[in-house]
Image 1 (cartoon, rainbow, N blue to C red):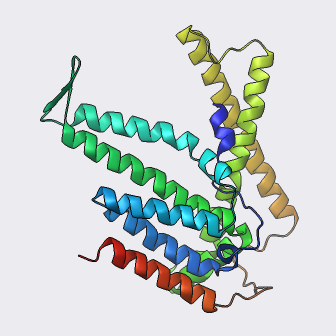
Image 2 (image 1 turned 90 degrees about the horizontal axis):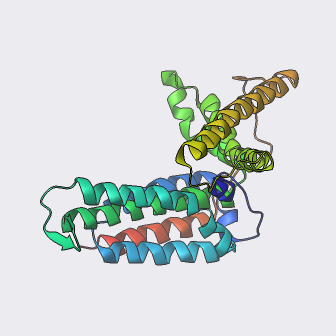
Image 3 (image 1 turned 45 degrees about the vertical axis):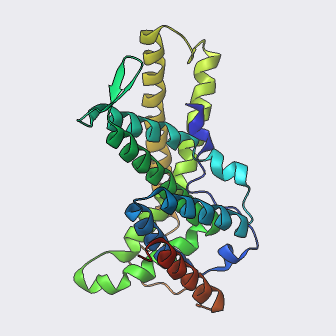
Length: 263
């Protein structure tokens, strides 16, 4: 459970880099395009190109590589679980390893799906690491504002997204505190006694839910006490402008798409 404390999704790293200077609306739009590229990948060469591209983005954003990759550790277990499911549940098992038979097609598809999952989380993590939460909120509000005429609550949705992102590291912090509290009371998360270990994990998760709901209630009370206007019209203190760096980023993404799907 300590890996929950390593999650970097939802956190912001202050740097002076081309990625940080990009307009938030442009970054969100390019994120959607990148996710489409990731989901459409069908060959090993596609994912090699995408991996090199993401490593280049990490360097361009002057982000600590170790911290970014460390944030993927909790997702690795989900990716491994997804791979195992594909290997075990895919029919037509045509390969044998020791006494275990498996499907080569299931193994290939499982590897692709697992890698897609890691790249999707990495792309969302890069967005939050290089964009301030307020900028994300305002960008989402601007992108959804055309749908307000159809009754879509654009500002409320963007505010919910920002609060949800800010709660991700909070969950990691609370999990760390609860794990330390359980260990100080004699709880052993590495115990070989499965029933005892399951009881400790259950108690920790239950306490975590109570703490998260308490935090959410505190946020609601704080917003209400400060006169949060809700749906009232608000002006931007620093209106965003699209400049040459944003056009360059769009050009790079288009070039990446051509490189991936030139055929």
